[in-house]
Image (tube, rainbow, N blue to C red; front, top):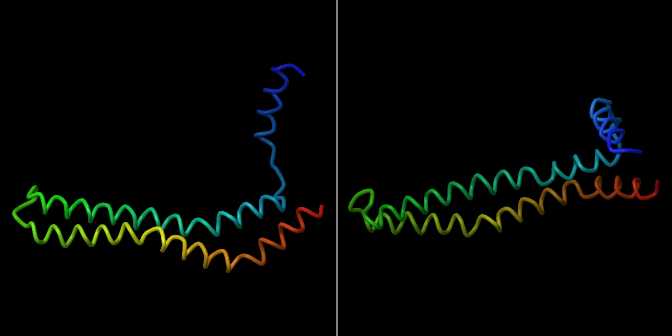
Amino acid sequence: MNDQTIAVNKIKDSYCEKPFTKLDELKSLDKKVKRPARIFAYIFGVIGSLVLGTGMCFAMKVLGDLMAVGIVVGVVGIIMVAVNYPIYKQILKKRKSKYCRKILELSEEIVEE
């Protein structure tokens, strides 16, 4: 096969409807397990970073003369950022235990085929 035939087949395959296989279902379940934990981690991490940054701005007197408030807000932001990963791991662990049986059964079916 030459390069032109390979390119034509690749384009042709992109327009053909592909059947939904067990592997596709397994990938879908894996995404279903991980997505909520990732979304939480991203959102909570961004909010924690913004809180930390706001506290720094207060403490360095960029947004006013509120150094004590800035230190408190900054510490709250540091705590939020510090607990983000353990919370993410806990959510992921809970989701994995929820879908574990189904994913393992489907994996065994795929391997046996």
